[in-house]
Structures are given as C-alpha cells and as structure tokens.
Image (cartoon, rainbow, N blue to C red; front, side, top):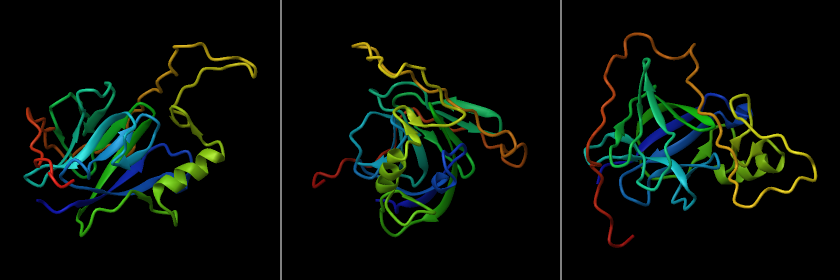
Length: 206
C-alpha cells in the first residue's frame, strides 16, 4: 500500500484565523479517506453525509471523489478551469488546487509523504480538530450548514418560530476561489478526471 500523504487544507474564508489551516493525512483504504461533511467538518472515518472524500490512489496520486450517495456540489478549480465531482470518477489533485463545496472553499497544500495516518488538526490549535470544532461551535461561530461567514447564506427567522416539519435547512452557497491567489500562469496541467477509482482493495481485517 502507498505511503500516506501529508496535506493542509487552507480554508479561504475561515470564520476565525485559527481555523484557516487544517493539517490532514490522506491515504489509501476505506478507513483513511478524508470526508468533507455537509456540516462543515473534515474528518476521517466519519459517518455523517459528506460532499466528497479525499484519498490516495493505488498509484500514489491524491484524488477527490464524490460517492454515489453524495449530493452534488463539490468542484475542483485549477488556473481558471474547473471540474465538478461526479460519482465514480475521481479527480486527481495537485498542490495549489482549490476544492470548493457548499459553504467552504479550500486551497490544497501537499507536503509529501507521511509516516503515519493522523487525525485532522488545526495548525494553530493545541487540540484535535474535533475538539476545536466543538469549542468554536459553542461560541456560536459555526452554523448548522457550515462555518458562518460572508460566503454562507441563512434564512432569517423570528425567535419563537417553529421549523416546519420535513423542510431541510438551506444549502450554503459554494464560494469561488479568491481571485488574488488563483494561479494565472506556470500551472497549466489539465484537470485529470479518471473513469474508475484506482483505490486499494478493502482490508479484510479492517
């Protein structure tokens, strides 16, 4: 099995600067994929519904994939070009790519091979990402549809309004990459979309 890759996901529009850089490890195998969940988190072995997942292919490439059951909304952008994630068609990722989902836009930083698979951790927080999310949510900076901010949208309600049964929360807007950091030259590789996910077979001992 290929070595895991150490990456950082830079939130282009963080609710707080301490939430800008999330250190992650991506690897092959079903238990090591990173899930970008619909509630605005990035987690491993997460059961919550996700927009997409990030993993390492059998030939050692970093890729993003939308599962069959996942809703549409995830997009990879590179030098002005983009590819919407489709079920069963992984998109190969490069350092500097942007991965946007409703409510969030991330810039990808690939740091190279890692020794072990570690849970996501914010660069400027002395605690696991899950604990940081819980603490920030308690402070009211995280909405149910993702991190609150200029790029998210919410429905105004009165204090005593009771949500109607069967009505889902509105989906946040999918933010575009910041124009001042989008590469304009020197990075001209086309976005590679594969027809079949070249993942490692499932570990029977997992």
